[in-house]
Image (tube, rainbow, N blue to C red; front, top):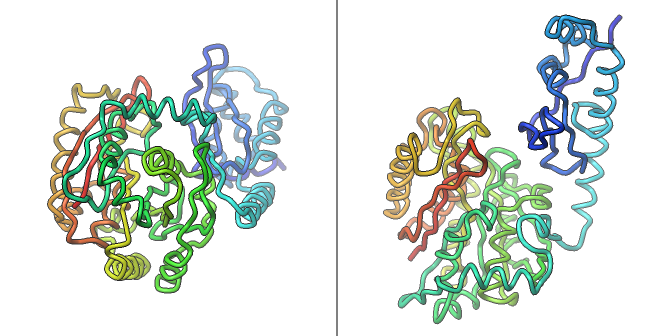
Length: 407
């Protein structure tokens, strides 16, 4: 009897190979259980749809043989299975062992080490400071009245530097001194976190610019109040960039003496699927209550930073179109983005959700959950849009993002 195939693991990064001499489908593990990046040749990639837990090796061989009109050797398929299984790309015991090992290592680690230095930004201190100085040099704009928070992108800084600069340029002059004395609550998108949950860590954040200490008293208070809505020592913190990039810019502007309350906001999947407000979920409601109480009690001690991107449109994101920034369909996206941003600035969380929920968020705003969480915790906040951008992350796909300030 032919061997049954395991399921292909969900949540893998998949995209066409950018290497001309090695065409095919790139498979990459965003959770970093494995550091291997696999390029599956086009023919074998066509058979991945049969990795469903029900089909067999013989089924794949028959399917591929029919595609090319000649026998595809069984050994080629078996070799692909072995490599994918060994590296945790299939739902097997190997994946469980890799997952358990990585989660245990992160839980035991004393520090949250930088995961994106050397790729998202320079890993050398002097080079990083020089680059950030270049980004910010024409964007330092002191604020007359103190602000309570900022929203900045979490896209790679080299792609979104103008919006990063527009946001963090506000932390100069009196605003810098005002923010540096506070605990910075960073609400970041959790791209791979549990839906309707919020990830915390008590670890100091390390970057090439130094170490930021967590506010353990506030973290523990929030944990006690929010209970099961929180995933404590959430492994997603180990590789998530939405908070790490904010830490780098915060350190450039404030130094490293401030404390941080890092919160990863998982997707509000139920809200989008059922079209009901996120707080209809008990876990989300409990966290909103707990964070709102913390925000009220420590009102004068907190500064808020949101690491958010907006729309994700194009081939990379499953759309049947080639997206070009500020052209064609993206002009309609720009209009829709601004409509949502206006509701955020006006503090209208209900109206904001009404714009997001159709078609389970047709614009795919990955910043929806941090934004809605902030609006629920600090309902009196009002915003101002500082900059809006669209950026081609590749030739066929666009991400939009913005810089905002809140008073």
